[in-house]
Length: 154
Image 1 (cartoon, rainbow, N blue to C red):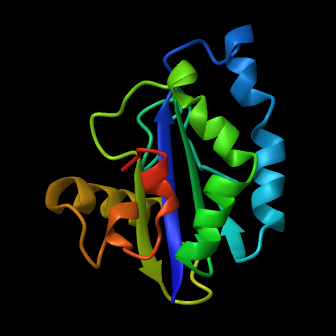
Image 2: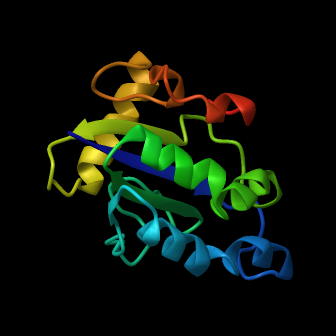
């Protein structure tokens, strides 16, 4: 089994503003770091949005998302907390609004499976409705993964 993850954020500032550059200037670097990281398998490149900026997960262009697949939670944890990604995570409150629902969901997939946006939406909805389970979960469901606790995130 491999680990899929979806992470969503909603801009609270104009993404074209100078204030957003602390995030936007790092996107390519963070994505490149992910792709070179141990345990990286796949990441969504095409969000398949309609003319209004919507898809199965996002209600409009103000919402950003990443979806990726990793060989293990340890590999994802290393990328999130021990690379340039941590710098972006630590600055998120400058750029993004607090979410009413979970902003991160993880779930297990068969090796070689590329998750769809509809699948990710269903997992996010399941986590919001039922909390952590074998079907959809956050960091707290993975007892051996601890770096998220040091960051005070859930």
